[in-house]
Image (tube, rainbow, N blue to C red; front, side):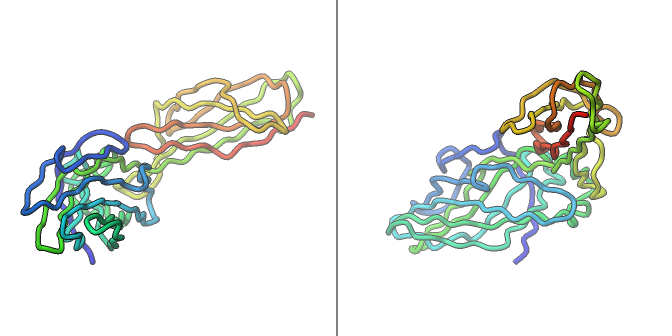
Amino acid sequence: MRHRLWAVAGGAAALTLLTATGAHAEGEGDIRVTKTVVNGGKNVIVGTTKAVDYPVAITIKDDSGVKGLTDVSTFSATNHEGGGFAEWTDSTCVKKSSTTSVCTATMRITPAWIPDYSDADSNKAAGEWTVNATVKANDGDYWISDYIADYKVKRASRLTTDATPEPVAKGAKLTINGKLTRANWENLEYHGFTGQTAKLQFRPAGGAHYSTVKTVTTGTHGKLSTKVTVTSAGSWRWYFPGTTTTARVVSVGDAVKLK
């Protein structure tokens, strides 16, 4: 089942739980959406090739019992023209009591479809998204609920680390390079992400945790470079905390031995 969706405005949070009384809704009878959780409360991260499926768990209550979902849609809360490229692919309902069920809709974002969805810049759809749903009871009651949950759909990111020279003498300078890129949903490639703060982190050989040594801002094409004085062997990595539209990412550590 494929559903082409339209866009609406929504709120702002990685995940906000809203009741039907706090959202715009209309229908017939006493059926209501009482809780909605998107992707287990986590951000939805979309790259350039792999389709992403994620659940929207909707708790529904009616005195006659819940029949199910008749429509679920989700869109960018800010980019109304080009932010509705998720599709509803499946749903299941689990009865919790005689009056309450949790119906879970599976939503799918397929990167290959995004560039052709509209003439707008699809990258502007990253960030806050919202959910609408129409629910139905066993006695025929129905309810059309808008803005039942807010969450974030983010562009995937990549980060590399390369330390030179290897091995290095104790007390010598080590150069740590890297590159931060993120998914471009218009041409389905990864482009450098400039002007972003990344943290250089170090873990001593045999240590369990990384600690931040310094922060560096990405330059042209998302490049990172800094020098440090080596005091011990260990692994170096870059960490990017993410933004409201771009996912956090941690590079693979580069282990450096002493001469």
